[in-house]
Image (cartoon, rainbow over all chains, first blue to last red):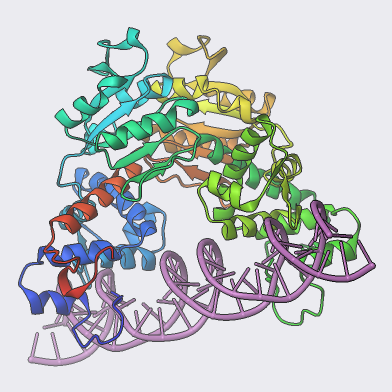
Length: 261
Length: 261
DNA sequence: TACCGCTTGTGAACGGATGCACAAAGTTGA
DNA sequence: TCAACTTTGTGCATCCGTTCACAAGCGGTA
């Protein structure tokens, strides 16, 4: 663990030393400080490790080494160990990690000990799919509310939940304690919906609309843009085709740059 | 543009100098070399700029400054200019960028001058949504084939295209020149589907199944994992709640660390 | 033409993430 | 009990991407 404070740090800095110095168990303050230091990229990978570990646990695996877990998660083992070190030191040298222990600690760090109710706004094709998507509730994200602007949809149950009109967004979100809003509307409507979610108190938004949302600083937005994903793939197709079509002789291309040695 | 070669480079290295030294117009070799150097993160942003610029063009905007475009795309202007510099120097100092020129150059770099036919495998909720999603064809990614393992679905048209049985994946993909495969199957089936797509010659895959796919080096995979996105949001909820609940006095939390000054 | 103000393009500094390599720490077996 | 072996945790070096800051370049104006 790297110490991120400025100068004047005579304090003990390693996670292990800190734990034994402070208290036998980890204090809430420690969790808080560590959470602040975890890089975003590592958080995304932790979620992947968690999924893999859950699968392992179901298959009755009780212990796993960094090498095995890294292989299953598609990363190298050094990175995996560093990521896990952000969570804390819960491995046993010479043995590996206890799957259940690791699962519970990652869940704690990711905040999965609380329930996070989800509201989906925009019940079109994608909204339907999201409302019916089994991956959410099974991972602790119950879909608690659906909204659409079409009055004909109001009251119609989708995935077991009746659709509310978007005008009721504030009261319904408050009542059902929605903490995550999912925007699956056409792009033109996205910013307005976003504004309503924010004023309803929702601080985390997952946006499927191809629009850059403007939000206050305290709101966290993640976006999933399918067209952008496609275009990134397209870029790689093009790059690869260029390489293949290029004047490559004996593995050496333009400017004497070696291609794939 | 940064020179990535090793030692002994007496050659001219800046993009501008190279262009004027080589030829009046940019050679294919230049495009190829530049494409190889563009960081992945920049590619993703270029796709966003492209979307914003297309919108601008529709509204009749002909010229735009880096500051304006950056604002609309949600990035800072320095980053935007650096990203555009990977594409080439097509701005006019003191004025800005010509919208149409920029659009065509970004499209060229992203490989959008070719057609990229898409196959969707797994016609469940998500598959339906993807098959009907208007954002693909409108951006140059026509959905050319649909596959499912359920024989009852075979022949049923979804979004105007009849579903094929997954056993026909090789012949249909070859015939319709599919270059991008989208996996929208349950997780258990994903790896098998992926293998079949790869052996059918598909080299780019967009994976919605929560599984880490194993593929040969020459295949490009991008994944969209909704549960992971949720968990990242959850992490931020938790971090924020911890900060708020923590023993924060006068904006100073544990260990004297200042919180949001 | 010569100057002025504006905007681009890009070196250079910075910071964060990645990968390496090894000491520390634990287990197993004799 | 001790030695050999395995695997973690992490300091360190490296690399990549972001940000800063400013010189170069262009249009407008007198």
